[in-house]
Amino acid sequence: IIPLFTLLIAFFFCNEEIIIYSDKFMYELDYIHAGQGYALPEKDIGFYIYTKIIASFTNSSVWFFFITAILYMMGYIIFITRKIIPAYQFILFVTILTSMGFYAYANNTLRAGLALSIFVTLLAQPYLLKPKTLVLLVIILLIHKSLLLPIVGLALTILYKRKDHYAALWMVCLLLSLGAGSTFVTLFGSYFSFADERVMQYAAEGSTHYKTGFRWDFVIFSVLPLALAWYYRKKGYNDPFYHQILSIYTICNAFWLLLIRMPFSDRLATLSWFLIPVIIMYPLLTKRIFEKQHFWIAGVLLANMLITFTLNMKS
Figure: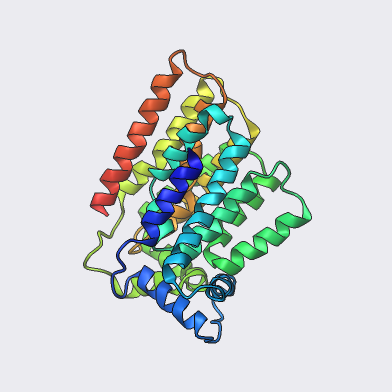
């Protein structure tokens, strides 16, 4: 059933209306230019090589968006099939579909979505310290440089495994952001101009169509998976792979807290939020923690849908 849903969802994304000057409009324009033989830009050259490859055998942007959507979802599907038993795979698949950022990565921020898909595939590998890991990391960064943040998080979790210290780091970053948030926007601006120049454009120009300031709703949304993970641990759940995923999430989310006042900071937050479906659902699908676990699965899935809908309406 997952392959069928994947095809239907990809068909939906590739046929959505393209609004002029939207992100998707610019991707279509780049695709047309690639097919016409325009020179590749220096930024995120990996994605533009990918674009030229697709453009070499079809001039239809519909096919380009369809293939990209398939590849985006494929990373999650590989993760699901390698980490979850068949009976519960569709549950995690639906959790991912209904999570914050899924729609944007498949329809608007395609470069970051494709890079994240490869990163998720990498997380599903049984052994990370292999030569092909380095190759995949280079490909990820060539597609979208903002993935440097979760890659650094992954490296830190390999080198330093004290997950309790990462929770402390999150609290420190929250306090620092409350006390001097605008300072960190300036301090780390050079990094994000390196990763995505649009972020600095948002910071410089602001936006009258976006709620700015310290987003307590986003903070609460970010802390809920941490609270749920703490409760799973209290109930006896202990899995090294899960704790590594949780630590990567905590590191990336802590860094985002420092920049939460930046307009469109949710684009940075999704570099941690993409792991939320795994954090909230993975323990429930891999070990019996509660007596009536099916109620917990249904409740977590429903809460995930409602929170995603509410935040999307308010953003």
